[in-house]
View 1 (tube, rainbow, N blue to C red):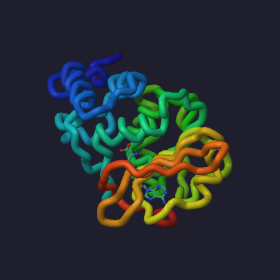
View 2: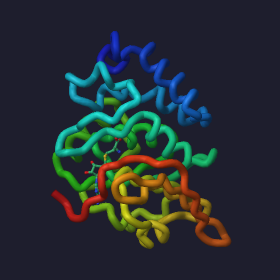
View 3: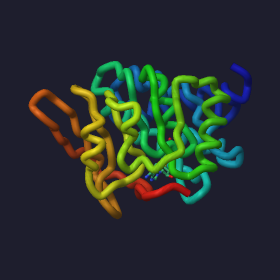
View 4: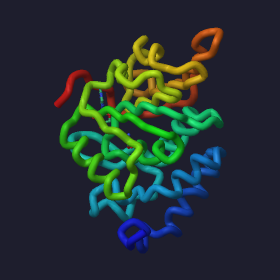
Length: 218
Ligand code: SAH
């Protein structure tokens, strides 16, 4: 890897190792997820002026009123979506700058990611190309109802908050698959729905704070 990927100073491998220690301390136990978090240089996904803060456990602005999710949330959502199993096909709703899609690409065979803001699509594609991730397909669309075209998915992760679980997302889950999304208005509950032979099994995790899911494209 060249120096821009491997990083120096506050973006160095040592700083990334500290992020990993923090994720473990925060309760992330899935080694596959931890290794993926270690692999993906988060500083590539934020503006250069913010690169020195890229490995702190905070969300950061990515423009257009949107944010890159904090590392803990990305790791936690992917850990929940995996449930200890290999994901063959994943769907992400809310690509943003493409960071979570990149981590997901390390634990899934293929990833589809949908984003409604055109300039962010361009940004995400550029970032993913730069670190040579080629198993993510980014699509410019309103992902409120998922992406039926490539369903079913073993994992669906929504990176924006909805007020309820759209039936369409449940319909796009493969048997044994999991949907992970924040539900609520001001603050939300991270919610996991697993599709089993008996039906849909829903579990609410802790409180989270995401940007809202918006309709249409812009
Ligand atoms: N996955 C990102 C987080 C991006 S923030 C990361 O790795 O950090 C959430 C994103 O969801 C924003 O970019 C926002 O534009 C997008 N979003 C909101 N509503 C959407 C919708 N209906 N369809 C697709 N994307 C949406």
